[in-house]
Amino acid sequence: MPTQTRTVSQVYGTWVRPLIAEYFGQLIFAFIHCSTVNTMKATALSADSPIPLLPAISDGFVVAILVITIGHISGAHVNFAVTTAVFIGGGIKLPMVPLYFIAQMLGSLTGAALAYICNGSVSFGEFGLGAGVTVGQGVLMEVVLSALLTLAVLLAAVELSSVNAAFAIGFSILIDILAGFNISGACMNPTLSFGPAVVSGKWTNYWIYWVGPILGAFVSGTVFRLFLGTEARLLFRPDGGDENSETQMEKSSTTVDTVAKSSM
Image (cartoon, rainbow, N blue to C red):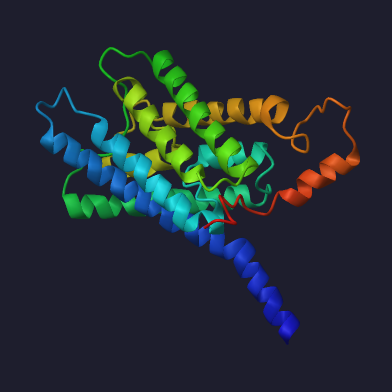
C-alpha cells in the first residue's frame, strides 16, 4: 500500500500538478493581459495612440509573479514558445510538450472569457499589426522579441535555476513590449494570443503570432544548444563529447523545467 500511494503521488506530482499550474497560470496571465489592455484603451488620449507602458508593466510583472509562485511546479512557461525553447534546450521531456500546450490553450481561453465578462468589451487583448506595418515586419519583430525572451528563460531559468530568473524573464517581457508594441503588438506568446482571438473574433494575421514566436524559440534554443549552454547541454562539445556528458544532461533535465526550484 505505501508503494502504491507513493506511485500515485509521483504520477500526480510529475504529470498532473504541472498541468494544473500551467492552466491556472495561463488563465491569470490572459485575464490580466486582456483587462490591462482594455484599461489602456479606455484611458488613451485617442484610439490611435495607445500607450504601451501599461501592458508592458502588467505583463512583465504578472509573469515574474507566476515564475516565483508556480515556477517550482511547472516552470511557469505560460507560453508555448517558451515550452518549445525549453524542450529544445533539454529542460522538459517530449511527452509533456503537447500536454502543456493543451493546458495553456485552455487557460488562455478561460482567462480571456473571464476578462470579457468582467470588462464587457470585445475590443481588448487581441494582437494586430500597427498602421502601415507589413506582414514581414510583423513576423520579424515577433521572431526577434521571442528569441530574446526565450533566451532569457533558457539562460536564467533552465541553465542556472537562478533566484533572479523571475526578474530576467519579467523585464525581458517589459522591454520587448515597449520595443515592439507599435509594430506587432509584441505578443511573443502563441497561447496567450489564442484566448483573446476567440473571444473577440478577430483573426486578422493571427498566424503571425504562432509563426514568429515559434521561430524565435527555435533560434534561441539552437543558439543555446550550439554555443551558450554548459558542456552537458551542447550538441557539439569542444572535447568531442562522450556518453557521460549526454547522460549528465538527461539526469539534470527533470520532467518539467523548474524555475529557481531551490529558491522558491
